[in-house]
Image 1: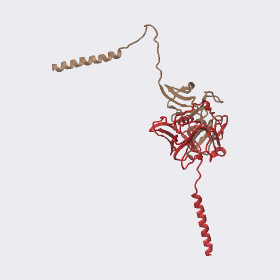
Image 2 (image 1 turned 135 degrees about the vertical axis):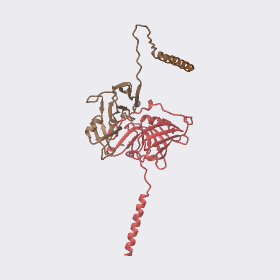
Image 3 (image 1 turned 30 degrees about the horizontal axis):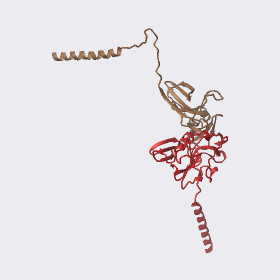
Image 4 (image 1 turned 90 degrees about the horizontal axis):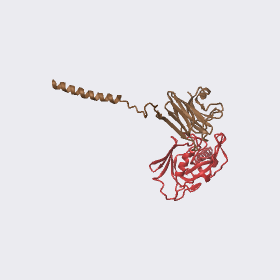
Length: 221
Length: 194
């Protein structure tokens, strides 16, 4: 009898331990785009393809790099009056970019509706002229080539492979309202303006940060 | 007594001169005719624009604009006048931030009449829809299709052909629809957009 209660007690302790261990396990980071989750983003320009969003086929704007004037600046060149900082207000669905104390850009944006946009302090770690974003399932499936002016950000809790970014959106026009799978969607004209302003200073179709060419801070709240 | 009388007389004379000058100034019509006997050229003053709102298209190539000049409302895409109409009492117009469809082919405007908003959809080219007419009003067919609901807002485009409509009823404070422009269908959604 005594052994029986001892056995049950041990079993409960084991079950409790397993439960606590499971609950306190290190959580895997959420991903902005499940189709790209776990992979570092790559620059991709896929002209001639169509996209899918909200169950509809989407005409994809073509990108002709030869027609574009690459906005580059010499490292160390004086191009700004103060520290650059981007704020994303989730409640108001507004982005404000400051150059020192001066507002450089203020515009409605769209953050996570089908996926969460995680609040926090981030740094832009790479800029890409365009990439592909894919995710969702069933009616929510999306596959969007040529997503323009992508500025990926990360921090110690949200790693680079989670794929969160600020970028232009050509498939919807409902800014000022939650509409994304976790990223910060902007009008293409606003995304371009921001892309050409933020650091790292653009040096090509893809620009990584380094010790001399650091990334702009992004605060999501 | 004489001094007072003298003062009154002087005051009356001065007052009379001032009033007389004033009347003369008013009644002095300066009619300027370049040549007497010829018909004067009348150059009308331009009516000041009372209201102008506009939004650039996503590709940055077009601008949708609403102007109110005097009693006329004008709807434009760049320099192309899509429509002009008489401004009715208590009528207001707004060009929403998300007016353009993402593929630059359609745009919508908010017209408020006596406090009730209706929404007009048009083609960027100004061409008529298949049923005729260069614009569609969303509020009326929505009210006919869903008499138990009240249309709250149209916020923007979920895709190139889907307008997002938000509504409410007595029991449900938030209900969202898509309005598919080509088919004119309202599609009720399981989630809401506001």
